Image 1 (cartoon, rainbow, N blue to C red):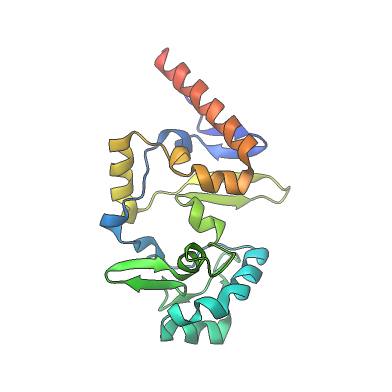
Image 2: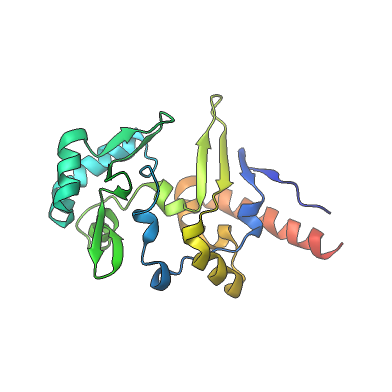
Length: 199
């Protein structure tokens, strides 16, 4: 059976690549480059903006002077060229919440959360990457697998571990859609695997 390009799981449309493509972040090789590459910040919701603003005083000392200046000028988020709300960026590329540990790029929000200093970890769009979420006008949600050249090491590591995107992103997918939805996703993935092996 040929796997359809778009699947529906629990009312969410998703690219079948999320179930079939290999992916596992290889931080030792990429050093968190996704925080400093690109031409826009990470997509955020209004609720996440409020949570980020609540955490701002805590993470402020971890931010660069340039990032602090951007936040002072335009806030923690802005509307990008498509009209989507995204985190503010420095010099047209670096997320303002990027901090550094030697050569490694860290998220100041996540760092503070893991140290028990804040209740907010990071935008769900960051946690879900390489999945990108799209909200449609009728309330429908779509999930796509986003290919990005800087993540080639993650693709290779995922291939070595035989780990597809949805398994690598188990925790953030559960955080976003719930355990019941994720269990249904796993059932769909198992059915597709069985069908493919039975060809």
